[in-house]
Length: 562
Image 1 (tube, helix red, strand yellow):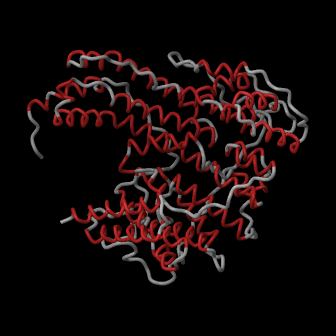
Image 2 (cartoon, rainbow, N blue to C red):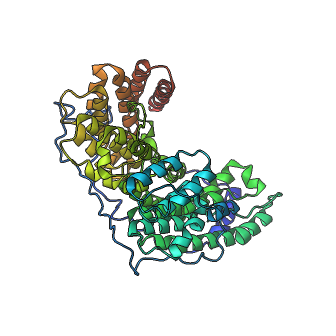
Image 3 (cartoon, rainbow, N blue to C red):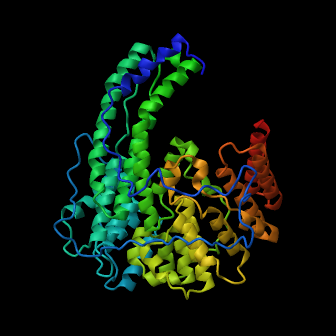
């Protein structure tokens, strides 16, 4: 290792000026059984390319036991006196934005007849079809008292559709004086939203410093306003987040995701703090400074990661596919942990879903309701109808509906849509049980359609991987995550047709992600050749361009290996 210049050593005290006296970290969130020593089997992809050591035979045959998802039990009992309460907002928390008062003060519109579930859902469908956010919220407020709707769920829906920073202002009145007939799931969901809203307002508006960025001024800023801000935000995140740990899975997930993002925002703010001009203009000084800074920030960064992963695990259990919270948490994790990108599977090419054409109230609600809300408002057996399940696949597949889909006598059309939903969940959260469920739903169908074959082959290539995103991000080394059995994808590629290019691309992408440590030039040439072949098979567009770019990158890696 090259010795540092004396001048470079002078950057160390400044890097530690703030962090040498940062607040003591609390214990990391409970990961619910996740261990960095989990014994996932190494990938079958050797240094020479995909499936070099894979057994011969039917590439679509899976001989191991498939992992089954254990659905949570939902406690739908009435509220009791022992449930956690929403405390007063902690000192120093930023107030809700002024725009939130519109949701609190808005006058409810008179609700139409909604005494039974059918009438109430028709009224809800009309409200959600309204484009104007203010009018929609007023219509929803009028539906809160509908006998045909579960108590508290429409308040939860209003908070979910509003800016998330406003949720505590919207739901606090109901939490302070819960209706006598509100049930635990709705109450806990409201409490989770309130805590998450408060967390969303932490680690914002940090102190700023104006030039000149002289060493003495920067040091005083870091040890003064910046340290005070960081200490205060750490206290707020800890105080608010610990209440969320007492909540059931979905509500806990909402709080955990926001707590994780708050901790990771702190890291981003501190890394973005001003540095003296002489450090900013000298590459070696800059590298020393940020190297020390990152080392000192690692505990808080990891704390944020672990909390976000707890939350994402709960969202996966809830069946959430489309959620701005999930999107933001995954984006932040990918930014801060580039070597363990949770979004690495987003590039997989999957067959187009049937065209969306919701023709009934039930189908339109399935297309618009958040996953948690849909689980309680829609009949569980609604998921056994092709039109309704098609809508749920895009937003999420709630626990109640997944339970109804356990019937082995369901039609091939329903099984294919069900498999697609689990593939989407697996791609988002890296859950092995979702890939295995996709395999179970598609492997035994005779005369599989090409698009179903593609789903099955992609699931097989990913099915030997980590239990979930937490194991993927925490396990070391990364190349032992177990994915890479691409023989089935190769078989789909050889069959030709519209799915062949997708299969070729997916095999190349999975092998790229699963590249073994020390993979040789031959491995990377194989990956490059696969991407190049995919580019020649895919139609003009983004997928073909992506394949060509990946091929060039893999070729460059192969060329760089001596």
